[in-house]
Each structure stands twice: as structure tokens, then as C-alpha cells.
Image 1 (tube, rainbow, N blue to C red):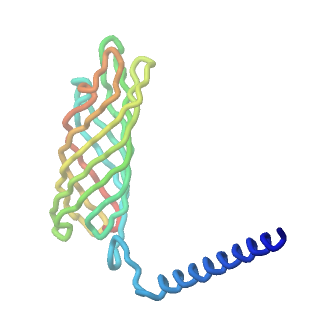
Image 2: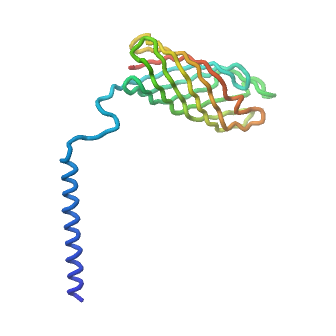
Image 3: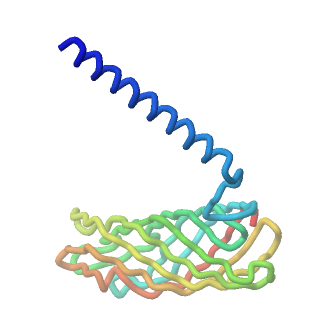
Length: 199
């Protein structure tokens, strides 16, 4: 019985030694086989960034409305923007019997933007916001989903200031209030954006 236990221990030790040798060989081969690291993006990237103020003219529940906010982003290779923004209703909107300033609306989220012909003084961008927010009316509050695509025309005023004007559409889902609706909170918008940064 002792011999059997000894043989079992010896077999286990042999297996462990073989596994250690195999792992060492695999590590050695993987570290010396190529010497090149493979990545999703090749070469060096030019990076920049900006902060911006943005104003939007739209309709909320069939009332003309202004929405203002702040946005910012990381510019990758002068072409792609990964960022975020936060916006809020800045004008009075009356609904039903609620009276003036009956609706409060704020939203924000992830922003993605593609910059076309960025070397030109005047160029275009395509932008989307995917996020959420809240709609408040007469003490009731709804958490909502917001999706907002837009096309913009942008002018390189200086090396650190770009001004853009655009048109888009705001899609809002999740409104449940009796006097509000998803369609009423959604709508076409026009915008102006002042970007300050390194482009």
C-alpha cells in the first residue's frame, strides 16, 4: 500500500514537471516567435479634444422651445469623436392645466461623431446621441430613452474654435404622463455649436 502511494506521488510529480516544462516552452515560443504586437489600430494616432456649448431650437408638446447644454469629446485621428453631452429645456412650455413652466426636460448620454473633410475650412459632421433623461410634469417624473441623430456644417474659425450649425431629430421613448406623449417630446431640431479645443 505504501508502494502504491509512493508510485501515485511519483506519477503526480512527473505530471507536474511535464506541465511546467510545457508551459515554459509555450511562453518562450510566444514571446520570441514574432516580436510584433498585433492591434486593432495600426500606427500612431493623432489625438485632440474639445469642450462645447450647444443650443437647440425645437418643439416640445407643440410649443416652440430652446434646449441648451454642454458637450465634450476625444477626437481620434481628426475624424472620430467619442464623447458625451448633457442638455436641458431652457424655455417655458405649457401643457394642459399645468400653466407656465409645466414641463421640465433634461437628457444626456454618449455622443459619437464622424468628421468629414476635416482639413477643409468648411466641412460636415454626422452625429448621434444615445442616452436618457427625465421628463417632469405636475409632480410626476418619467425616465426616458433619447436617441438623437444630426447632420452638421462646421467652420474652422481658428485653430481652437469651430462653429457648427445642424439639423437633427430627437426621438424620446418612455413618456407615460396623461398630458404628455412620446411624439410630443420628440421632434425636429436645429442647432448651433461652439467647440473650443485642439482639433
